[in-house]
Image 1 (tube, rainbow, N blue to C red):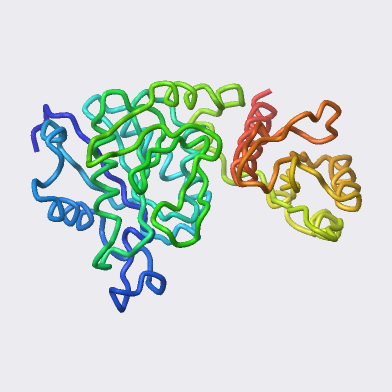
Image 2 (cartoon, rainbow, N blue to C red):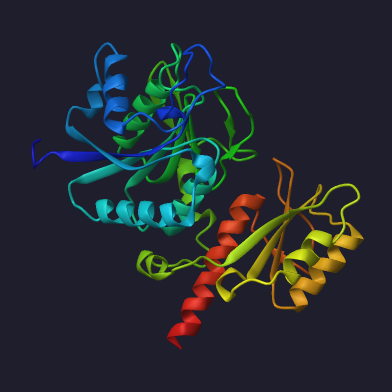
Length: 341
């Protein structure tokens, strides 16, 4: 390794991209998180006739296996480790970018979390796969190559996601399909970029808008987040036909230790954030007891519009899983301010 060359660090966290199927032709029944990140990089190089892209010749590619998990099992503790490691690497002058291999199931949550927390102009690129590593038509190697190409691009910045030839911003990306290769969408937002025959095309407008989208929300320092032993408990409740307040009431009546006490609820409303009368009554009681309630929508596209006399908090256009993270961070920030005062 040339100690004067720029570095791209590839952090492995597991997922389908590192999975293995007993029958390689079976892309549904497999075990995630088995293949080491160094092996994934070697495979990505082998499956490209020229190895890595020429643009990467000026970089050293370094690998670290941070964790090895199925992303359905993602935890607060893993996020703490990932955040701390990313910030430490980004603070190093020679590190040009970070690429993270991740499972698809909670990728949008990890991407948004890092987007809210990291302080850097350098790119952090998450990528993934919908087929296991030993599938004959695995999409992982190409996704990893595309992620590395994006990471080496001078225009790339902030937290981005590469999958199936598309570049999404962490603010808008959602998983919208269970099995197809292009399983992600940015909803109504513009794609950050896309690949055509291996050539990357980036939208400067989309890159700029992502950088500003969530900066109006409270931000914590990585040090402050690292000091938190437990994240504030925030649950997601969905409105649906015949929805009532029993789940909310049960959560309020739970006898738990202080650290697991319910602090917030994100309600995934129907349509434009509508909530049944019964569920709304229970949520109002929760709010009166000190639980912070934010309203979102279970719709994959669109944001809440026209609520001038809203009784619940604003989810800032975020889908429920990301609104939960934003509320968790806001509550954590309030806790830290209270502790310091």
